[in-house]
Every structure is written in structure tokens, then in C-alpha cells.
Figure 1 (cartoon, one colour):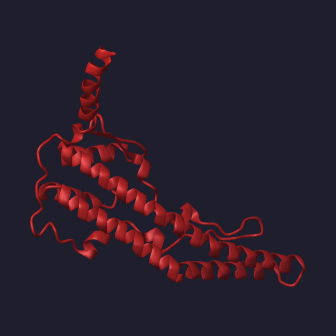
Figure 2 (spheres, rainbow, N blue to C red):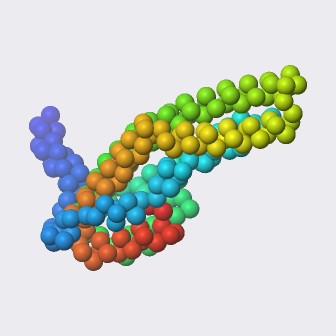
Figure 3 (cartoon, rainbow, N blue to C red):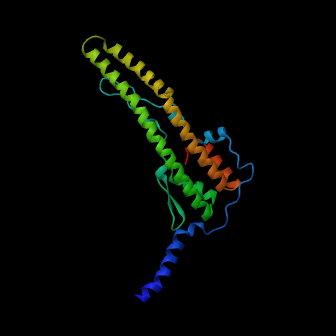
Amino acid sequence: MKTLKKLLPLFIIAILVIFTSCEKDEEIAQPTPIQSEINDNETLAMNDISLLEEPEISIASLETDFHLINNAIPSETENEIEFDESSCEFSFHGARKNQLKKLFQRLDLNKKQKFYLHKALHSYYRCKRVQMILLRKETLKIIKRSNYSRDKLIKSYKDGNITKNQLYVALQKLQTATKLAIKNNPVRKQIIMNIKDCHKNFMIKLQKILTDKQWAILKKWYQSKSSNQL
């Protein structure tokens, strides 16, 4: 028992060393006054939101109903970057694995920067995930109503009230009306603004973590057509 009591403090110290290993490194460079100010247009240009503002809806037919293409949201990147707090290292997965690896090699982050970048990414993904769930639910409400109208049109065709050509013309018009209803939905617009705020807050955190040189590298990567986003 005495031996166990002697070893207990050593065990606690070992655990503390493991969980604070990421924070034992050189201090993060403080942002310059220019760095601390972020331009809205610059920030939003870095974030691909085209699918949010212009949702893609399938064309309905006799056999298929209306549905979202790619869920009408940008491709999710949350599972592409993982962080091991014990080693303080990132690992990358998915189609952009090599691209992300090269980016982080160019950034050449120290351990403390890696730790705080991990925290910033986690907070950003969580913020965006909540809004994406709300966005999808709101969009599916409109899709459901459109599919109800589609069913009525098909019933009218099967009852002989309209021709097949008239049916497809009506379905095309319904698709256009559905896209407009989704795009102009005030609730959806507010959710998109919330997603933009998630991204802007993420960018502000990154500016505080990165040096001027690192920020320039990340900014250039974000603005390239192939980068998508973090």
C-alpha cells in the first residue's frame, strides 16, 4: 500500500505531461494590427457556399420524385483532418489527403499552433454542423411539399386529365418553383448567415494562431479553385 501511495503522484505527473504536451512549445506569434482586422468579402470568398445559396434539385418524373443533389450542401470536410493530442500531430484522410498534407507541411506549425488550430477546427465544425442539420430539415420541408404536388400531377395524368407532355412541362415548372422557394426561404437565408458567421469566427481565430507568413500561405490556398475549404 505504501508503495502504491508513492507511485500515485508519479502516475498523476505522467498523465499531466501527456495531456499538456501540445502546449509546451514556443509562444504563438502575436498578430499585427493589420492581421486583427478581417474583411467580410475576403472571408466569404474563402468559403465555398455556392451550393448553399443555389441548391441543386433533381428533375422529377413518373418514376422518381424531387430530391436534393449532394444534399444541397458543400462536401463535408470534417472527417478529413484528425488530431492526436498525445503526439500533437495531424493526420489526413479522403480524396484531399495529399493536398492537405502538403498544405500543413508548408504552414510548418509549431506544437502550440497545432493544438490551438485543432481546437479552432473542432469549434468550427461543431458550429457548422448544427446549422447544416437545421438547413437540411428546412429544405426537406419544401421538397416534401413539392413531391405532394408532383403526386397530384401524376394522378391527374393517370386519370387522363393531362397529357404526358403536359405532365413533364408542369414538373419542370414545379422544379423551378421549388428551387426558388428554397432559395428565397427567409429561415434558410438566416441559417446561411449563421454558417457564414461560423466561418468568419474560424478565420479570426486562425489569424490569431498563424504568423503573417503562414496566414498568407493559407489565404492563397483558400482562394485557389481546387482547395474547397477546411
